[in-house]
Length: 62
Image (cartoon, rainbow, N blue to C red):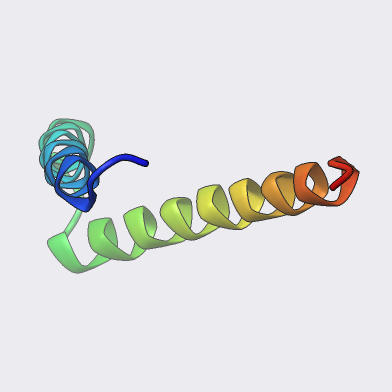
């Protein structure tokens, strides 16, 4: 099993990359609106990832 520290470092790295890409992509949009849009996109992504994961777990035989 992987250590939680590896996941923590990966999470911090990808959060930083997300912030940099968001700054580049939303130059002319107010910061509050940009944060809202990023939150919506992340919510949709994790919602779909959860849906896919739950389908995989249901198809695995124990």
